[in-house]
Length: 491
Image 1 (cartoon, rainbow, N blue to C red):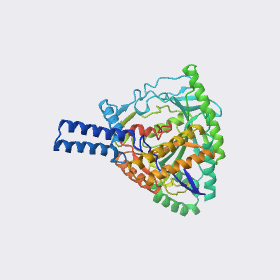
Image 2 (cartoon, helix red, strand yellow; image 1 turned 30 degrees about the vertical axis):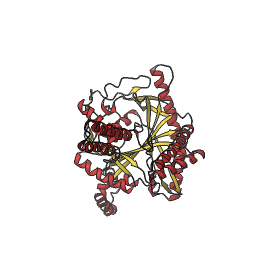
Image 3 (cartoon, rainbow, N blue to C red; image 1 turned 180 degrees about the horizontal axis):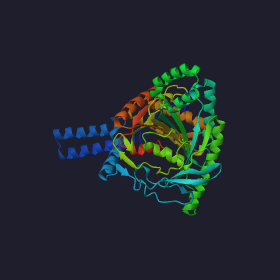
Image 4 (cartoon, rainbow, N blue to C red; image 1 turned 135 degrees about the vertical axis):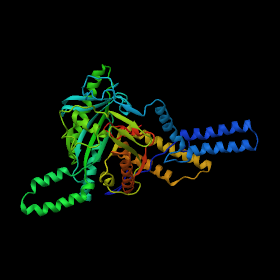
């Protein structure tokens, strides 16, 4: 990301490097397959009809490699379509919990259990509880992903009306957050990934109306209360509340001990990093409510399947025990249903390539639509980042030379990508940190009709934020987990 002036920012284009002259392996395979088919056809029918068929085969191979369909070439769609077909044939597009009434199973750290009772997109996930230590509250929640061998903890945080601040104050707070991130991209950092989630939840205004009825009771205040009540009636449809979560993830410890020992060591390392993160982001003027306990994280996870969300994570029913995962999942090509709610997930394919302010995401964070915006980040150590940028520069030079010899023109997009690589190399030399990141947006509604309307509103808001959203057709089940506090979404 390039900072062009005191309060303006610009992102580079999505990097699309390939194996040879910018061509991906799938593109090369598609064209090669078309050529092979053409040779076979000409060998079998050396006549005009065979020549026509051969030409069609070559054109089909080139079209499959280059012709975009909903933002992706057919060769890019092939893995998704194949996976969708396999899931349909094996009846894996619908899933129900093996034990919906078994209740919430939050294990003590050091007592691993099999996740065989959890299937579908939530397979291999287990919710653990940790008995304090390193500033963590008793019963702090940790999500263990046995498949990826990772452990994640969730912090509840709050901002302070960022959009209403002046330009200098915004810059100062962005600088504070940048300093927090820079501390994670160090050699030997225990943090594997970092994720923030901003949840927008429609609010019926019941809390505001209750406060008004309790405090505006004198006769002199009757007119004021009536006027304010009319204002609430008018603006009620656009009322929403926000929750922000910050997720830290570490890799499983690589010692030679038992599984319980590795789990205990991993949780200890995670809590240590979480305690450090709480101190750092507090210095960046972000209020930290602390690590979520098991029952609080259960409420966040279960909310994906509940049509009406509870008023607050902190005010959840502490005595209720429930499964942390949805009891039923039904995956369709363009959406997925968890229990009572339908969801559609988008990938942020392009970030703003024009100068924007630090609050450019405001259109997506505000509004009456129930949605979750999340960014998953992976810190890259300086040595690894230097190797990657050197390899990228070498690949760009080689591709440019191949394209020049082949007579292909260099596009402005490729020139911009090369400039970004050169600038990133200079920033690394100056000591700046490097991250990989990806963003997702999930829209939720109680019915398919309301979902499609919410999707249209979200796509319009994304355009106002200068973002390009790409709906993840055929992969909605897995995509939904990218907007849960699981640090998923980076390959």
